[in-house]
Length: 454
Image (cartoon, rainbow, N blue to C red):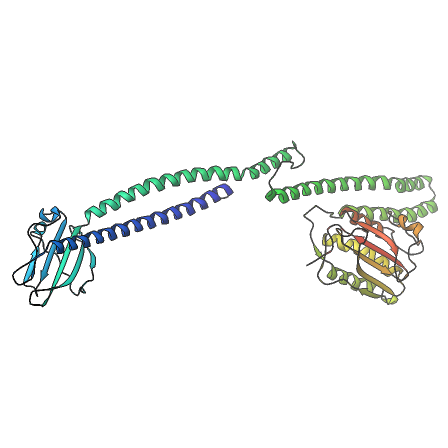
């Protein structure tokens, strides 16, 4: 049962069978009850007919005639029988049809209250007993018990015929509904088959994207798959470009080293090595970090709790810069979510915070602020500010390039802000450098999709 079509068809068939089965049982019970009620009414009418045909003797006591209104009472084994007893057992009468047959006389039948029962036997019977009081000429009340019975074969045949009809009609209806159900399920699941076919075409290289007119329920799935495909292509291109950039960037340092080695001057070779090896290391580190960034797939980006990662980075940096005694003020709520991978968040924010701690005098502030330029649809920015010397306007663009630093006197590779900016751009965001209210630099990160709460 790994097929959705088979599962739905089986489930719908079980429900349909249960519904039709219960419906058939209900109809059968209703028809049988109706037939029994009709038979009870008919037997009561027979008792009234017997009472209407009754005569009296010289003392005013009730006597039944030999000729009865319904001819079936006169035919032996006709299936309709009558029996009357009264006068404390002294009077016993039965219809000619009941010759050789003695009907049971129920006891305890209240006067004026019919008593209807079913009697299973070789010839099952439906029996109605009715007790009444008859006043004779002397004014005495005499109790008579009328018992009328009819063979159950006729009712059972009608019930059997009804069941057969129900079976034919409901069975036919069930078969038609199953066929219609199969067609409807096949039609309803057609978009899934189209998606599977399109995916096979993508695997074979015939197509590059899922581009069909898919229903709304599958749109997020197809958009997510397209996003994953696009993300994979972007990652592949990024790796290819990073390798190309790495090869291109290493050409010059390698050429310098080769020239120094071929010159035969040991002092020049040592100077070239001491100068070019750190440069090559910076190039490799930058390209590795750039290639390792996860980036964003639309609709598939993970959400990372922001505050715990900030606390973790701040705790580490306060240990590294213990001698400076930096006071870090964090105004980010505990439940704010960053729309990105955890590794990317740590790499990006770690580089920004490290620069802030490196250049700050006493204070670093981390906070969220409204992005008035992108409101109302694009939310807030994450800001890191310090009270250091800041970044002059004329060098802000340069420090976002690989290997560039605003202050050449400070140690470092010069790739921190450039790596952070590259990661933010991979997610479709922006990294902006400005002036903080503390007097130093303010690095603001805007990410698409808002910084949400958990």
